[in-house]
Length: 189
Image 1 (cartoon, one colour):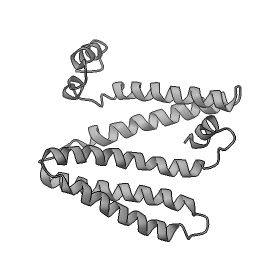
Image 2 (cartoon, one colour):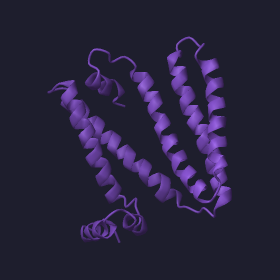
Image 3 (spheres, helix red, strand yellow):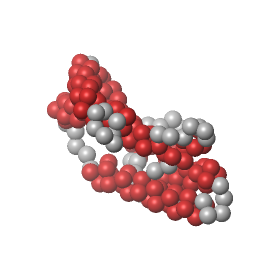
């Protein structure tokens, strides 16, 4: 969403590549999910699956690069798309193995719907603030403020939507203190 603005902040004289950054950022989601699942699988003594999954992802990336880099209008974005496909492939494989390895039951509302809702609230709020601010201040300052607002709104959304359970909060460093404070503020049961 702010790929062009972020590049302008970081590299004011070489800010091309916003589309490439936007596509590449999707990779982070699948890489983080895969790494988390890899840790669980390794804890269960299944250390080969992450290697196999990432190897399969690399093969997908190579094929995607060979195909996409030759297509007019895609070029270097093909490499970014290939990276997304690489980590998506790896994630799918490790996730399927995880489902077979452990008795994994979850609430789709708590694990998917609420975080997505919190993300949408953050995006809409941040974008509205950005659009209002660029009318009166510079794009750079508006970007910094809008990103700061995004962080605050996301944190508030997580609390209001009660995304984390008591057990998850207690696992944090100083989890008991955090849980007491959140309970006092009526953000936890």
